[in-house]
Length: 144
Image 1 (cartoon, helix red, strand yellow):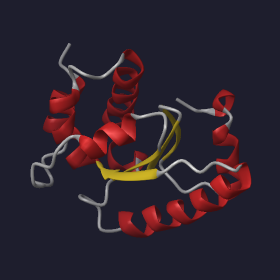
Image 2 (image 1 turned 180 degrees about the horizontal axis):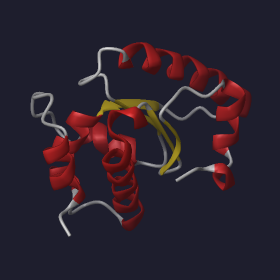
Image 3 (image 1 turned 120 degrees about the vertical axis):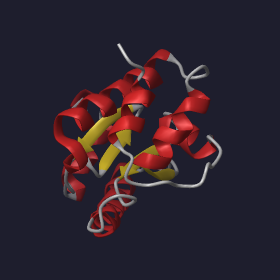
């Protein structure tokens, strides 16, 4: 079976971002952060969804008393950075990458924006309300 990063590279030739370091992706995969994985690199309508998601997320985090930093990363930058991180990723992080790849293979860009909480996908493919998001801070309610 091909590596998840190889699959993402083949599926997302739409953008050619600069080769940034893996620090942003490390933060996205880190359970001490909340992450948003965006398709803004490939979809002109994604920026508005990302902004709305960030607004709802801020409200939900305030309600939950969660002060973790929020990391926003585009899918194309993430897939390029994954190559540098594969050897360092723990099993939970590798599972998160496999989940993102599986959703993307099945549904394409419609799975973005994607909200990552506690190292797992909490929401994907739309912008949930702040009330719906507040449930994501209970790991029992994560969807993937």
